[in-house]
Image (cartoon, rainbow, N blue to C red; front, side, top):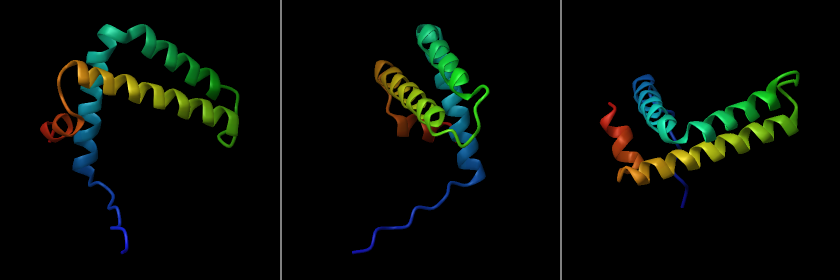
Length: 91
């Protein structure tokens, strides 16, 4: 059985998702500012003075983004929400 093809989100869906993630980051920044700022600093350190093709820095940035994604998931759980509900309410 063939797997269904994933369709790219529309501009409106992406905009709603970005807005929802922005609100979530603002909320998380109040309680987890030290963690978020340290992660941002590590990503900037991995990016500055390195080329876009630098595999080690790209892996470091990806790992930091994964950590931030986990932090946001924990923040959603703390608030008693689910990601789908949060993102669907943003539209």
